[in-house]
Length: 399
Image 1 (cartoon, rainbow, N blue to C red):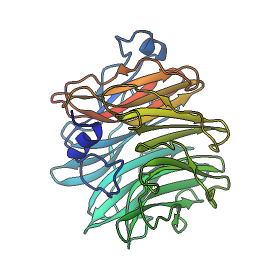
Image 2 (tube, rainbow, N blue to C red):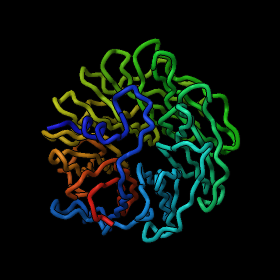
Image 3 (tube, rainbow, N blue to C red):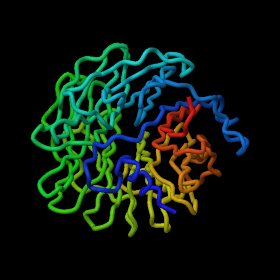
Image 4 (spheres, one colour):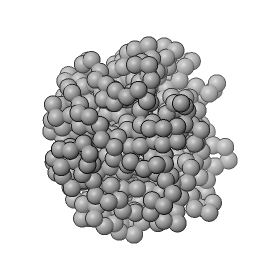
């Protein structure tokens, strides 16, 4: 049985634990968006997912990949990368009715004619910010675009990375009038490090990017970012100690300075990667994929002191098959974790598990996608009444 990591690498999926700055396209797949009617219904009976029928957000004629999902009140925002008949695009669509219907998709354009990849979006105070990597002439750069009218239109895209260096895998966060973007930058010898840039005027201009890590050897993996108020948190995977561990650093002054010594969250002998985080006040939540149990499982850990220390990780998936690429949401004391799970050699499904005690324990996972093909790259958002999950699925005849 091939591992979940090897399968997605073979399919040209995003490399989570490798040093490569990848700009390959995903296999042709349809963007699938599923909605729950009720959290209580979704978890009352393990034989029923509680999710509504899927609806198409992108056009059925498009090859839509790497969906991004953001929830803000009754608005649902979806972004993705499109490659149809050799024409590349960075696409966006919004719903004003909780996801029951979506407006016509918007093409955000690009900073050059090269292939875009790894799009991310964030919503803040009626503003929509998007970032992605743009590739042309064997050089990858970071693009940025913003909307001042809740996603109806977008300003022309601009480049915010150093155009003399390869940059990829951007992540974005916003708080008040601050916009923060973090990405990987490749230096001499194929060494990768985390680079950070910020805007204090709502994305109109950006400061010069600054390095967060500076490896002379080893590599840093895809970073994550979270922001609220004047606090900015950065998380990444790092093999400076020869195996990959998950690290966290933070800033309390809107990204002007960061802690000089990051916290090692996973701190084990296995490979830990693909981390995700959520911050709520002094509570910092983290999930990642980890092969310390013998195969890749999904681990969860929580800090109650702003990320200085973390409790012992909890194994969320606990499967004999590989589990990977987690995403999660936190609402009050409820924690929802979703991931890609190996079912058979050719069948990968999206599973979801819930904790009702702040992440101390998790219930039995439910199968959300449950299709015969390969489902991957889940995204999740939640509020007090609903859980929203999106994923990529190559099962023929889905839409």
